[in-house]
Image (cartoon, rainbow, N blue to C red):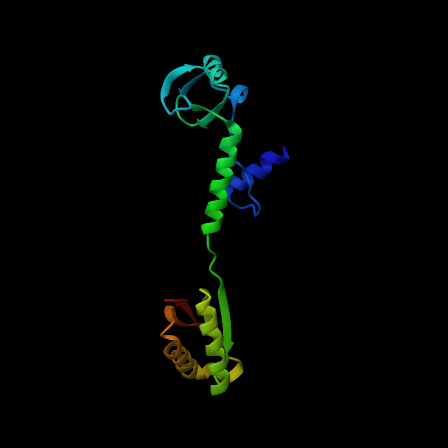
Length: 187
């Protein structure tokens, strides 16, 4: 009962940890009466009963693995199931290795931030961009500083000019509430 609730939440997409593994049926776990069988060489044997397909798999000394359960009739392949699982695991590892994550770093400045402090922050921005991270540059306005939005825009333009050789503006400066921000991405 608990699993079915978790499964329902996962299908709806509102559960944080959603790990429903695709179940692979082998040998006697296959539920269909008739299956389309492919032999170990890749040749199609045809549509036969499950029991006859199991006999064919026994002749080769291998397992009958349901490859495509949604087809009509389901497609099963005669193969070594242990080797199949190993190859699937290797494919997943390879896909994870090639996957890259993009982090967004944030640099906060104020409208009256000094020149030296700004050059230091620009150095940090360049370092983040070189490590292939995106950078969100925010200008925070406090109290009456909200009237100085033109200074905030000038400060963001100075940042763009200083980093134009390594970064490109992905999102132009935008004022949201008491913060003005823009997003820089690596070239």
